[in-house]
Image (cartoon, rainbow, N blue to C red; front, side):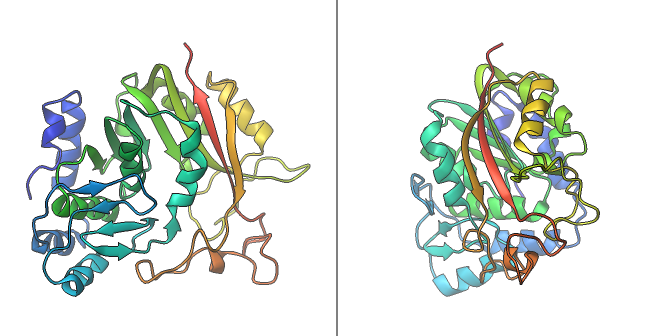
Length: 312
């Protein structure tokens, strides 16, 4: 396996690129060899991309489409998309284009270096490039998502969209090097949400912007939800705030004045099982008799998207 972060090594992020490369090389995941064998077996593609669309088109049709599809589906589960990869339509668990559609009209990424925390396979990074970003550095410790990104790189090389097998704790504490920082679907997984928000502020340059997307409790008289066990069958959900609590967290982190871009209840049309993600999804996580609640009896998922500008 060649170093997929070589382009970053010669740029502004050599230490981060080296850390990502070493983490990838030293990974001991039991499925890693099989995943890398799949990627090695993929044909070499060409840089041909159409990114300003719901399902970004990467690469061109190469060889036996059915065989290529059978190879790519082995990198299951494909969660963020949709994508068209070398002529193959990948119907992912999430209609991530819907989330992007709620955010994109309100933000300017032209010429920005962007950090995407919890980026998954890099779908949103593709959309960011399509919206004018100069470069996107995504981090996500889930190795199968890094493998999906490597497959995209093999079939459509050279895009300035990188997915690193790192967490936010691996980043420098005060780079201020990013014009935009995205944290979508991460906050409620953090044990200390104010610390996470403070880290976001430290990572964005003065005058830059933070795009935060999170679960909230959208109910009168509610307070922060600290689930016992799982929430909608998700592990490691530590705290889901109400809007007033979220505003307080942001103020504590020195990020007042957030602009609400959207509040939406997640539907089973937006998140669902597909051929490319065969595990149970949102439908199985909701009360079958009352979809206003999860199977654990908590309020069903509602998500807010915020735009926060760093002025200092």
